[in-house]
Length: 241
Image 1 (cartoon, rainbow, N blue to C red):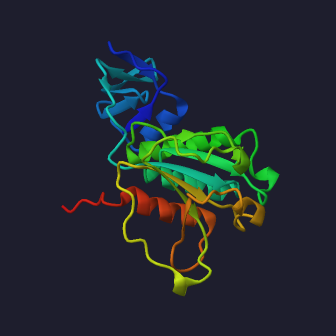
Image 2 (tube, one colour; image 1 turned 90 degrees about the horizontal axis):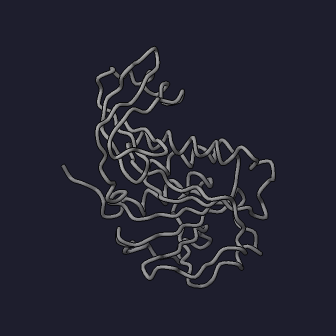
């Protein structure tokens, strides 16, 4: 099992478990001698759980550097803010799929009560739990909300590609994507809010952003995000055993 901490000492030591971490230990019925991993997102340490005076600690002797996140591409998901429970579910599942960065967006169709002062901390908790579940050593970055007009749509990396999830209006006139980006590329994906982007917002997207759509039924925002991130994250990454 993987847990997160602010800072690991390269010389080893003991770290007290938080209440949340103790709950995970109890839920997974971990024995005190079970091997556990702690990560500060730069390095990680393998060790065991020990109990001293009714307090549980993680004990380790050394650390190792995290060389890279994983074999999947760097996926940055921009999404229009929508209902909190559905947003949490989307964040959880796309984190498990390996998304590297999230940027929520205020849109013309965003209802203000969907985002409040507790939203960041709540979603950070969702992200951490998803990383523990999927055994990821680095948590994806969660940015503060922005608006489309404040975004810089100029690629900062020549291998960076931008995609806008759209709705197919004329299915008979569309072509199936023949080749997806290689895992080495950075992929930015825009998912609209409930009800889609407004006509004014559609005008903010420059021509170099490629519009993509899933053939089939029209999906909710959170379902579309999970489906599209699955396709891009795992293109050419399936393993035959």
